[in-house]
Amino acid sequence: MTRQIVLDTETTGLEPKQGHRIIEVGCVELINRQLTGRHFHYYLNPEREIEAEAIAVHGITNEFLLDKPKFAHIVEELFNFIKGAELIIHNAAFDVNFLNHEFSLTGGNWGTIADHCTVFDTLTSARQLHPGQKNNLDALCKRYSIDNSQRDLHGALLDAQILARVYLAMTGGQVNLFDETLSVEAAAINESSKIVVKHNHRLPLTVLAATAEELAEHEAYLKIIKKNAGGKCLWEQ
Image 1 (cartoon, helix red, strand yellow):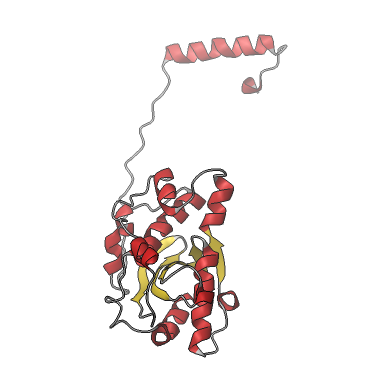
Image 2: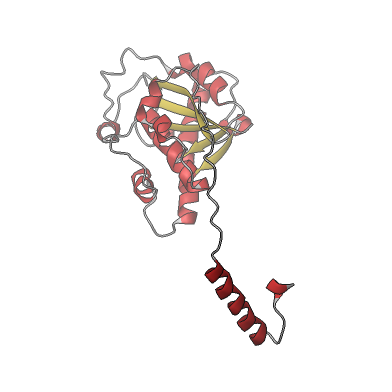
């Protein structure tokens, strides 16, 4: 069983070394390249102001986060959700740096992401596949014909859902046999939900036999091949 977690975060700014914090984390689970319906999502109180430039990107305001939990309150739940999985992240260095910073601030013995997970960076992969082209999430959605019409602003859970579809298309050419399981509404699926696919019986195949005229044309063509090949024709052996 291959377990992967597609993960995204939103933050108060660009650099954790300057005291910036995570304000939203969203994850969706893939097992054997199929969405399970399990997800992890929290808005977080960063205990500091959000930069105006960041608000313009994700639309999350200081007032909205006042009553939200702090990262230390959800760290164990997040850790248990991602532990042992391969993390699928777009521009992984950004999110991993912030997560490691948040782990360190809790004072717990969480270690770093590298201690517990492997990471697949879809941005690095996209740049290798499409050098010299735009490889942000919106550009990849357009390239792989993935609907991102609801992505007016960045949002961690929505972006994780979209990135899951991009990753599947980019690495295997198959998003899912049933696209409705990957819609934005999947974020509301209960963790115990299961998708049951019923397989219909195959219809009998129709076999068309060659006509006498077609068989005669085939034989005549084999003779031409035999003549051109110096008397040797593999189809007659």
